Amino acid sequence: MSKRIVLALGGNALGADLAEQMVAVQSTSNAIADLVEQGHHVVITHGNGPQVGMIQMAFEAASMTYAHSPVLPMSVCVALSQGYIGYDLQNALHEALLNRGIDKPVATLITQVEVDENDPAFADPTKPIGSFFSKEEADAMVAKGAHMKEDAGRGWRRVVASPQPIDVIEKKTVRLMFDAGQVVITVGGGGIPVTRHGHHLKGASAVVDKDLASAKLAEMIDADLLIILTAVEKVALNFRKPNQQWLDRLSIEDGERYLAEGHFAEGSMRPKVESALSFASSKPGRQALITMLSKAREGIEGKTGTVVG
Ligand code: ADP
Ligand code: MG
Image (cartoon, rainbow, N blue to C red; front, side, top):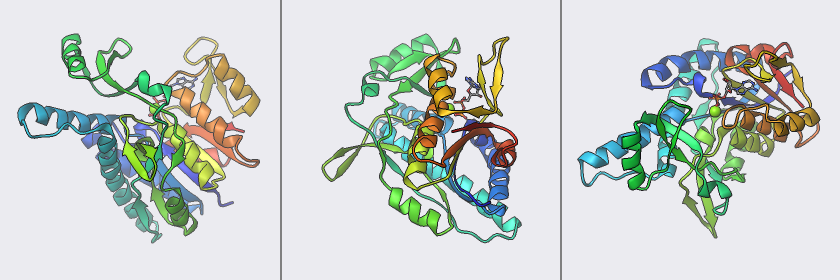
């Protein structure tokens, strides 16, 4: 049966640098093309952690060498990352579809996501982006206004605010393309965060969680299924503990309870489970699936992954 799917790609679908991404988009595109070949309608969303970090850092480094070179606002860095990742994905996916005899338009849509300027996240930046620095380098960056945090014993990283997504500004265009049977790549990196001031949308210094933004989009374009693809086949209780238990199904009630009990790590599995629950509970018949890219097909057939709702 043909489904309307929002497919959220995790970091491992794109790789950690330029060379890895060039290779990763091939296998990612083949897996997506398999789903299209089966008759499913897909909208693709994706993260941008390594890419937005790379872009931000390149401009920062240039500004240290050339006095007139600008340091880019985070919103512009997200926009650039959408363009770069979208280009790679639409190119590889178009080819993978043609190799299957499918001549379908594939296009990337630059997408803005509205956030609230009073969101408490702005006062407490938590989302790490880009590369690692020493304590001394970090102190120098803090002196210039950056927010830095120590990341799990690995070194210091720049952190940015990660406010809640409220609205996807280009949702009607995404829907038109989706309903016309075209493949759309959108809400890249969680969308370009903007705050609303009358008719004006102002870029915000933040990175929206891509899973939360994908769940919002999935609701707005009336998808049946939100698939969150990541590095694990299933969601676990007591993850990496001796009593770890992989979940085949997760009801809304159990999901809410496990969230409250702290089973899912902040910044990684927690937003995925939150996103899955919010989409699956938004309308009867809607479901979410958390699994890995290579298992997406089996997951849709109900053979693996964690089905939410
Ligand atoms: P992505 O780039 O796909 O968003 P993340 O690293 O942000 O990936 O989140 C996925 C990771 O979350 C998994 O690879 C796993 O290591 C980790 N994780 C944390 N808690 C859990 C859990 N309860 N069950 C499964 N994986 C978990
Ligand atoms: Mg993530």
